Length: 304
Ligand SMILES: Cc1cc2nc3c(=O)[nH]c(=O)nc-3n(C[C@H](O)[C@H](O)[C@H](O)COP(=O)(O)OP(=O)(O)OC[C@H]3O[C@@H](n4cnc5c(N)ncnc54)[C@H](O)[C@@H]3O)c2cc1C
Image (cartoon, rainbow, N blue to C red; front, side):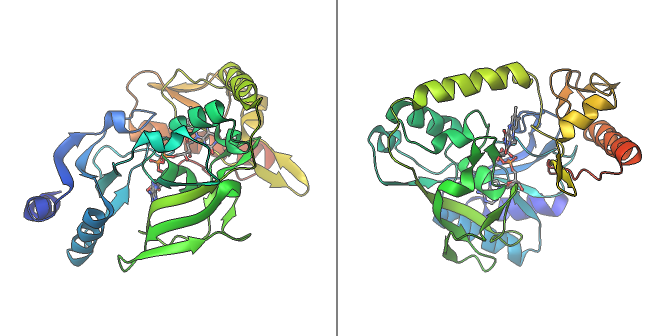
């Protein structure tokens, strides 16, 4: 982190619109809350991000965008500069019905869900209850059994690998299960256009019911990172990872401060200050056990 700090000190007063936090405790920057420390840069506008990433690239350092931290395990000592986007956004923009909404990557899905509920924006129920920034949700095509966010996106503005601002028009090949197929490594989503499928007066009820079901089936008030495994397929049979964890009797299995949730087998709960290495150990153990018992290789959904 030595040369990272020198670099960050050298850009601190050069770039307007960034805020640097050296040796920041990042434990609360991911929803599973594993202990983590690193250098964090809060970026307040697109131009500042463009300048910052240009400089980072010249210095050959590593960086990663941190959204809501709901799909990532942060290591004890970050080997990269964490960049968090906090672009200005006037929430009154969401007060009225529009055909298409152009939104910054840093806006939270919770804000969009409450807009959907208030205005009845049909289609937006697909991301009900997913803790995420819009950028993070688009990056991994987040979704529920109601659908995926990719189905609502029409355009994504992003910073490409040469730090130029580009627009990607969404087509049928832009997204697949829990991933986007258009961003290259290091590229950053700046904003996106979201459509809806008209107005549904009953959407509020659908969202409320869905949230209730989620609260009953997932450990929403624990420190988790969502599903650790992607679901898989065995020929034509779809295999839900949580189900398989349940069948092998590993719900509740505990390793130090982390355990497999009793409520949902695809969730780990950090109940006692678990570490990155301990959590990884439990994830790998579950993965190996399922491969051994069923011959299915469940891929990790959570980034690590
Ligand atoms: C309780 C709980 C329930 C969950 N339920 C669901 C669910 O039902 N469905 C589902 O799909 N997921 C679910 N998740 C996982 C998580 O909410 C999603 O994966 C979400 O999309 C992560 O968004 P984020 O902003 O937190 O991204 P982060 O976890 O911060 O980052 C994830 C990846 O996205 C990249 N990224 C973030 N922002 C940008 C950007 N602007 N440009 C480029 N790359 C970016 C990061 O660099 C990283 O590689 C759940 C998580 C929790 C904790």
